[in-house]
Amino acid sequence: MPGPGEVVEGLREQFTFQNLAYVVDVSRGVAASAPTGPSVDSFEDKSALGTDLQSTHLSGTISVSGINVTTPIVLGRTQLTAGKIYRMTISWTDSGNIDGCFLRIYVPV
Image 1 (tube, one colour):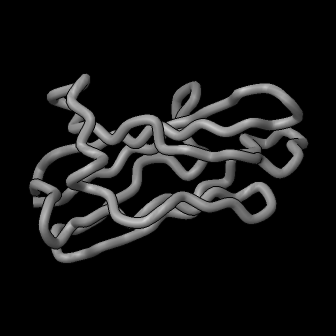
Image 2: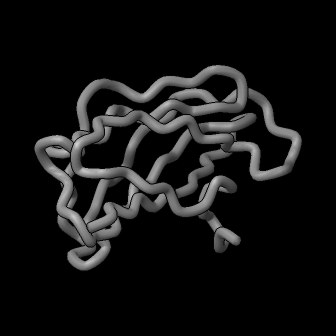
């Protein structure tokens, strides 16, 4: 079960040969209006928090449809390291309030 602030979908898995965008339900089980202005605040290797890897590990833009946010493409083919867990932090505005969540991506060996 995901912890506080983690997306309801929990830990994701992405192999090094995949380039994937993730669709995230940002409602967390609460009635929410469509989020506006979504952004990726950081993309980090969990063993080296504080080093933002967005410029090298993500491609494209974040988008929203209803209560779902689609992340930029995570570049597994060229950037992810097997055996690591990455953390993507996302924020948006909902009814005038700033909210956010994070998703974790595990790269199997």
